[in-house]
Length: 513
Image (cartoon, rainbow, N blue to C red):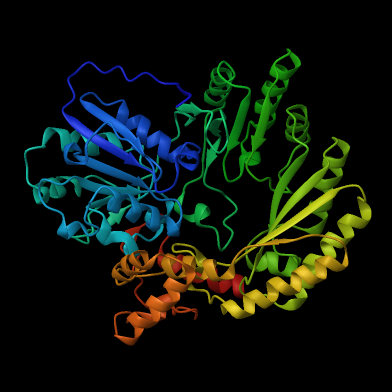
């Protein structure tokens, strides 16, 4: 597979437990998913375990399905359920946990989607990790190994006592678990066939202190954790032994208190004669330092990405994006100074209180940037607003799909007038994402039927109408477009995060007012 294993398993015992670590997409994408690979590494490093990675395009497996004791799924996107069901179908695994027999593998899931609102998918899993996997994955596996002969129910009784484990069949209250990041998470396996070939990814920080009203990362990855400086340096030095491609990962890497020192260390490596390509997650305009841009340019970057979400300062204030036009122009000044050739700018359509004046403000902002920096390549791209559980905007209205599509077309026409091509996402698929992000457990049979029909956009719409007609989708206040009243009990309220629901209510009201 043209892979390089960057860790030692140190296994000494005979294999007594078999695990499939499944990723609900193709190999190329799975091998770029740091969270998925990290969980695999933890499991693969435990004595007595034989762990195998499988993907939707896996054509051969070492383990036979009947010999697998446990299957894990990493869920990063709402539509990953299609890949999950694909893998289950491929290996003749019953979709619903309650229908699987004692001799069939236990199946669990984790990742940001399940940590926010597992309920639309809950009946697929025997148990779910809420929050970071690092603090509890070893205890989970060891509990299962040590109690292999117990019944499924007895195993689940033991697992639900572990902090961060949710057993859907028992509706137990769950307190989210956070890793300390005292050890820096990095790519455990390099692959030439990864979406980012042979790229060594280093997680610099987890979470975001900015708390934008729509941002899931800000609210489920709390508190914000910065990886220790020396750990990052050691990881960089380790990575360059195997590859010339490094990626720094984090929602707000430029907020790391030692970011300039980290960048200087990379610059020193390049100045010593090492050919090194370094990429970073999107930058925040008011946090980007000169040293960061100097490092990126020295490492071959010609463009960068900043997320400004909204075109007007008014709307940025509504979403708690404390970013001024001046901040944006200042960072572009710096980028031009360091020889960057272009900038990708990310925005969101349909944010709460948005008007066409806000859309015009986005066009005018890009127009003014283009006028000032004539040779600078600008690439605006937009998705539509998706309300996410555990954020202040979990209560917010999502605009009708037809309205959002009209806004997409409006932006395309306005940008075309100033000679700018704009990229817009699919409002229809974003609607499906919204449906799942705020859905309840009643959606599980709906999703299974959609999958059985082919999982096209038309299937989602047609099956929804059938289920609604037959009274199978009763919680319309959750899955509809409308604003959700704060006093209504939500499917994900049982998950205990550091922020309380009432605090989200207050923040939502503050932002809108």
